[in-house]
Every structure is written in structure tokens, then in C-alpha cells.
Length: 357
Image (cartoon, rainbow, N blue to C red; front, side, top):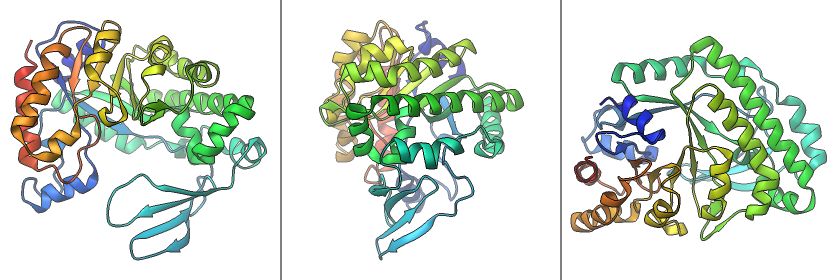
């Protein structure tokens, strides 16, 4: 089977020849592998490993597209900038991390309505047509499953006001959160319509939506149902109307939200972060008859470089999760630079060996 055929079967609960395969890597990891000679200069992991998917991030949701980022502070190790959302973020120069939240212009509904909402129009400058076209062609050349990739509403909101203001808003001004969620959902759909009309549809949709942290989601299931679920369902229903299955990534512990995420229409959950409390076997037992799963293999095991430990991790999980709706091999987070190329290569070979159907 081709990667495109395989993932289409996995996402629709149909028989396939083996489990799927995909992975995320920190940019530092690819640089380290290139420096070590495992990859050629400019070569990516997608060119070396038999991944079944190609992802393309093609939308820019920055409120003010004309804003030039301003340097607020800079040290030897970090740079702090104000962006077109009015957010002040600190980033490390020497390694890849999630940016640190420093300050936000928008802290409440008034700030949202004044600075952000009027600017969130479906401007074609928000769409990277050229890279979408290039990635789509690359995927077709290799017969891989091509996903439009981007953020859904939760991940759209917090870059504007920060997690703290967002979560306080959920409790004290829920209508503000609903308005933000609906605004970003409508913008996503409007941009999809423009992009797909000009460049053609993808094979599926991949949303990033980090709604949890260690052992807890950011919100209760009741809050999810009231504030986020309607916007999720709007975007997912639109994708399904085009025949596009939906994969949703969420770091952190989101298991309490999963019944409602399934009701919203997701076809696959990724990444099932072990250190946050997610358990692939438990999730497969409870939900594997309704959605496909991707990930859930503890990245910390690969970091040890211990092949016996990797064998144990894979042998404990793959023979079970390969049965059911469908499974795709992936770690539970992006692969860091302390994982050697040979270790990851062994992980792939062993995982696919166990994942034959």
C-alpha cells in the first residue's frame, strides 16, 4: 500500500497492511544529525524515513500582518520581542523551546475588540500558497497522505492574551472566549475556502490544539463543551463536508475531554504524552473502537539509547494497539537532539516489524 492509501484506511477504520508511521523532530535534532553526517546538509527526515504523511502549515493568524516585530530586550541567550498580536514573548537563541509569556496587550474583552478582532479578516496574505503547492506536489510524488496543518481555536486564542488571561476569561467572561473561538473558527473556514479553491484540497486536516498539562486539562469537560466544543465542531464539520478526516494533536493530559472531542468529530488523536499521564493502552481500550490513535510511545525511552528498553516499550504496546480502528507509530512528543539517528532508525524498524498486519 502507499502511504496515502494506508493513512486513508487507518483514519476510516479500514484494514491495512501495517500500522502507519510519522514523526515530529525539534529543528535542533535535524541540525545535530546533519552535523554528525547521518543526514546530508539540507536533508530532512521526511526524505530518509518511510513516513506516511506530509504536513504543511500554511496560515498566519497574526492579527496585524503589517507589524514589524520589535525587540524589547536581548541577552546572550534570549531575545524578547513584541509581535503583531501585541504579545511580548521571550525565546531562547541556542535551543528550541516554547516561547516564554512575558506580557500581553490584550488581557480582556475590550482589548480583544479594539486590537485584534477587527484585523482578523480572510486576507490572502495570510496564506502561504507557494509552500502549500510545493508540499502537495512532494506528497503526490511519494504517494503520501497530505495534510493541511495548523492551529484550531484554543491554540489561536492564547497567543493573543496568554493562557492565564484566557483561563480567567473562561471563568469570568465566557462569552468573550466563545466570541474569540467563533472568530478563529470562521477565519479558518474562510481561508480554507480560498486556499482549496486555488490549490486543491489536501487529503486530510491536522490541528494542533494543546489543551492539557501534567495530569490535568486546562479546563473542565463542562467548560470545554460550553466554550470550545462548538467551534471545534464547526471547523471539523466543514472539513468532513469536504471529505477530509481530522487528526487532532494535543499535548498534556486531555483524556477527560476526549469523549467530547470525539463528539466534535475528530478521527484521530495524537500525541498522548506519557509524562503528562496519558496511557496509550488505556486510551486504546476505552476509545480505540471509535477513533484512530497516533503516538503514545514514551520519548524518554528513546533518549536512553537503550535498545532493550525500546524493545520493551514497543512490544508492550504495538501488538495491542495495531488492532482496532487504526494506529500510527509516533513518539509521544517531538524527538529531541539527544536521540541519536541510529536509535531513531532502530525504533522505526522495530516498530514497523511489530506493526505488520
